Every structure is written in structure tokens, then in C-alpha cells.
Length: 363
Length: 65
Length: 188
Image (cartoon, rainbow over the protein chains, first blue to last red):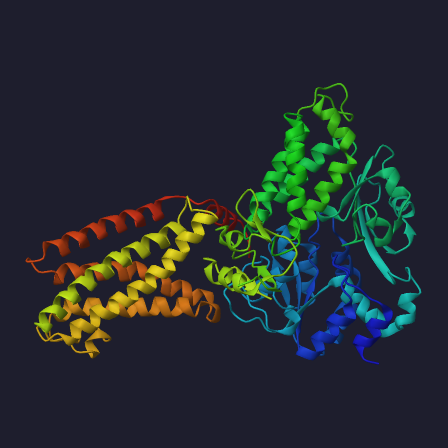
């Protein structure tokens, strides 16, 4: 059976966040003779599993890459100055070093950089795996497929142990083992070998969550915010998380620091996001700073109700209007925070903060 | 000539610099946000109007699909 | 008699072409410059920019054809396309030819815009900033002292166009500034 068919049967989907069926991508890659870029960037805030795969399973990763490309060129992308890049370089892997920017690890940004351009997303008219795409200078891009590091590792595992092994873990709709990086206010931050269907509480217990932790982020800057109790009642699965607008995504769980006001934490994250726009699309380069400003107004409680209705409108208008999904992720995160923290924000509008009750809140 | 909604237009978000001509020529499906960039609602548009919008866009940011 | 008619027609269509070219330039500058019109005004100005440029080509066609046809001075059709090959006033007619060649390039690439790489269209279009002063010098140098009106109009076009270009270069523009700002960061 061909590799693509094996992957179809196993039901492997991308582990980088988009969860696209890997068998389909690999089939298209074989058909167009595509080269491969392995995304080992850990681009999401709090991500660590790509580096974990490189550190612990590099030979299998390389084998998986070889299976995908049938010997055609492979490059592995990682952040400049990272331990992952160092390990890859030492192993003699052809590396693609990306700058430490949030969107630089996006699929088309990697392709753009590999073409000699900047590590910024490209407009996608046709899937790049077909080889008819064009870069920022209208130059043709040779057929290229981008796969997450964990996904490529799983390809090697499935080729070795068979689809049945893969399907024996996880759920019917989200089969197979999945890595999840858990960090933040926990005793033992770690990358865990998990699978869809496991209770999130079990994952959190494994790393030892601070007793006073109140909020958990699932999916980093492009994900959702959950109250710790709510998270504890859910299964680690996109089915369960979809009820709150989220997904297992890039496998990142962050327990937020309880000593910092969560509204301030979100404020810092949205300000960071605003500075990470590639500056190519109007709705993103103007919308993200505007959203950050609105949230900051909510945090300080000054003219909160006008800021809130403005924020609501802007969040609704943002998704789907950039060349990449970065603004969609920020809109998702901010919307989730606005919903989950509604009571906390009301307190700020009235001049006090549940986290720091003795002070009049100033962000 | 009666409108004949038969084509889709797509905005190249990187090329678009907010001139706003598309919203003028395809008002049924495109309006502008507070910074002048297009917000598209779903739906096909009249082929003639779409071609004119594609031609007129100063940034060549519209394409038919 | 016919010859005189051709001569005057050539002058008239020539000065009209310069005026139209200046108008087209200004319309282009307003579209790409800062306090850009959005929406309705943008559409009207873009429509004018396109239509006037085609109108200008028509006037240019008459200007060149009559210049070749009249026998008062010696300009053949080759020197209408190849710069600096006319017997009469080689340099100044040559500039006119050069400007005309640039007009053809700009118009052709614009008509074919959907089929050519965008960067090719853009670079040729920037040629308009060269084409316009070249056309003005051509006009100024070939206007005789017996036709002060031609000189006056050409100078007026020069002044208005220069003001437009100066405005375009000096003003900021939110989209352009935001893009430039983002490029300051590390992206490779």
C-alpha cells in the first residue's frame, strides 16, 4: 500500500494546528514531485513539542521526511538561536533558520523564506504543493509541501507500525497519539504523549498545576481561554474544545500565572500580537493595534462600554481578511477572553480588580 | 442589462491598500471597514461589474474565481 | 493651404496632448498619494485617469500623423517611432518620439495588466514620471516665438504637474507608512 493510502487509513491529520489530512497532502506531494519543509519552529506562544521531537526522535523524523519526499530535498525550519536549530545543524540536516517572529513559522512564510524572500506569509491562490504558486515578487514557486515536525514523525511511525497501531489511540474522529506541551504556572512543565479523548484534568495533574491558578489557555495566542474548572471537565479533543471555540490545535496548554491579573495578561498578549503583524494586510496591521487599544481601555476601565462595543464589532470583522490566519487566531483569542472574563472586566470598569482587591486597578 | 450573478471575486489582501473602488462598483457584496479595506459578504456578483472592478482596482488586488 | 492646416492641427493637438498628459498624471498622483479619495471619488478619478489617457493617445495620433504629413518640416514616420532620427530639429523631435514610446509602453502594459507580472507593470508605469517632463521639454523647445500661448500653456502644465508630484512625494499615507513600519523589523 502506498504511503498516502497508509496515512489515509490511519487518519493522520496535521499536528501543526490546521489539522489537514496528511494523506491528501502526501499524495499531492508525490504527484507533483514536491520538496518538503518540516516545520520545527514551535511558533505558537508556549509551544515546545516540535523541539521535543527533534531532541528525542530525530532519526525517525528524518526517516519520515525521506518517505514523504522519496529522496527529494528536505529542509527543516527552526528559530534562529534555538536549541532545536543547534541540534539539527549538528546532525547535518539542511536547516531553514527563521527569525523569531510569530508569523514567520506560518506555512507560506517558510516557503517565502526558502525562496530567498522574507519570512512573511504569501497570498495563497493555489495550494503550494501543486507548484503553481507565486511569491511576493510574482516569481513561480516550485512544488513545496510543509508539514509539522510531529506530523512527519508520525508518518515514520505509521509506516513502521501500521495504521492499526495509530488508530488504537485517540478517538474515532481524532485518531492517534498527540503531543501536548503544558507550561506556565505548573510544577513540572513538560511535553506529554497524549491522545484525543484524555481528560484535560489528567494532563494538568501530571504537570502539577498551581492550586490558585484560575485560567488555562488552550492553543496559545491563536486559541482560547478557559476557567480552570471548566478546562478540568473537558476532554482533550477538538470535539469538546469546539464548544468553546477552540481545538487541540498546535498542542499548547498554558496555565496562566495567578499572581498577575488575567486581564493584564491578555493585555500583554494582545499588545505583543499587534507588534507581530507582518504589515501586509490592512485589516491586520490596523485591526490588531486597535483591538489591543480597546482591550487596554477595558483593562483601565476608562470609557469601558464604548471600548467594549467597538471591540466586539472589530473582532467580528477581523476573521478571514488577512493573507494568513494570524488575525483569525487573535480574534478567536480576544473573543474568548472577552466572554470568559466578562465579570472580571465589569469589575475593572467599576474601578477594582478581583485579583488585586485592595488596589484601584491601574493596568 | 440585467445583473447576472455568476462569478466570485477574491481580494488579494496583501496587494489591497484600501482604495475602495471595489466597494463602489460591487456594493451588494463589498463594503469598507473603518480603515477603508473591503469586507466581503458571501455571494456571487454580476460578471460585467466584477470585470470592471477587477480592471479598475489600482492595486490589482481583485481576481475572478 | 492644406499644409498650413496640417501644421496648425499638429500644434493644436500637440498642446492638447500635453494638457491631457498633465491631467492624467495628476489623476494618477492623487490615486496613489495620501489623502486619497476613497470609494466614489476614487472610482470617478480612476475612470477619468483611464479614459483621458486613451483620449490623449488619440490626440497624440493626430499630432504625429499631421506632423509627418505636412511638408513644412521634414519628419518621416520612422522618426515618429525611433527617437532622434528626424531631419528636422533632431533633438527636440526626438524627445517627443521618446515620450511617445513611453506612452505606448505605459498604455500597452496597462491594457495587458492582468496578463503580465505586476512588477513589470509597476516599473513601466513609473516611466510616466520620465515621460511627462520629456514631453514638456519637447513642447517648450518646439514652440516658436510666434506662438506664446503654446509656451504659456506648457509652462502652466509644468507648474501644476510639478506641484502634484511634490505633494505626492511629501505626504504620508497610512497604508504605506504601516507597511514600511513593519519592514523595520527582522524578517529574515
